[in-house]
Image 1: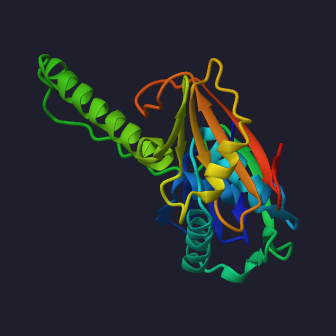
Image 2: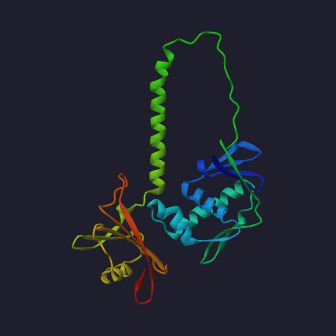
Image 3: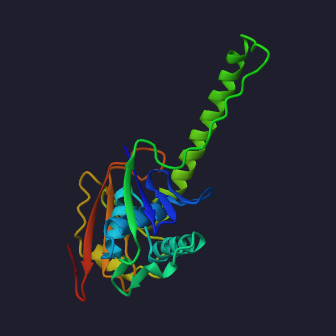
Length: 253
């Protein structure tokens, strides 16, 4: 059973397929990125309410093992506004609440539905041949079908990896204390705050000796991802995440 939504009576949103489809013309479709899809789904689930930026960060990126910046977040919100406009919806229905988060206007009518198969059904034309099919043809088609399926699965996997890979391998080495290997996010402007946090000696690296600190100036919240081994996007990493609030004199959990 899959869930879909009719937005403003004009647009079908199918989260499970990352799709927006024009209700009156099923040939008009737009495939959203995974983060954009999840952001829109969260806005719909909290229709009319402000969804805090940190809530998006946690549920769209961090829970999937990915890191996120403010720029990346607002780029996805901008993509949703452009998608709304393309489908005839007012892009101002997606409202930014400064320093808080995003709200989906209560003026937008949303109809939720559950279907065994969502999305417009395309007509299937049955073609009857006047000549019998050779019996050997199915054997020849099978390897081709298997190859196409494998290529499709590989493409989906690579798309998923490019969307959710946290790029921890690009983090900058900051310190090594005993068994603890400490890294910082590569897009930080400087690492004074990182080093200050490290000097407080609050990192517990026992069992999780690889620590990845994500911290930005003027951003109160920071995160530390600790892993049992050096992060690798091609394996199942065993990691835990801790969060801290930056204060004038110290960081607290």
